[in-house]
Length: 63
Image (cartoon, rainbow, N blue to C red; front, side, top):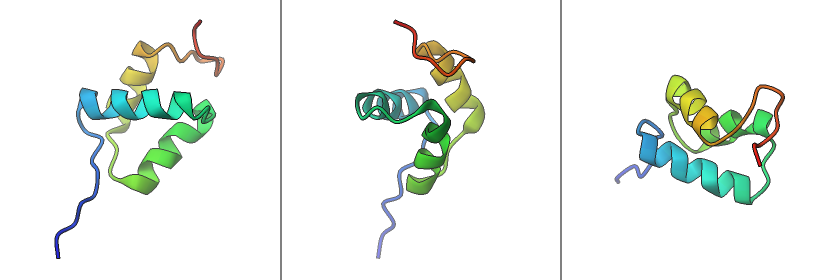
C-alpha cells in the first residue's frame, strides 16, 4: 500500500498550506503543529514563508 503523506518542503507547498490555514483562521501559533500532524515540515522554510505571507512577530497578519 502506498503512503500519500504530504510533505511541506517546497515553497509552493508551504505557501499553499498557509493560504488555506489563513482562510480557516487558524491562529499563528497553531500553524506549525497543524502542518506537522499532516506531514513533514521544513520549519526554516515555514518561518520564511510565514514572514513572506505577512505574519509578524506580534502574531498578527499584515493587512
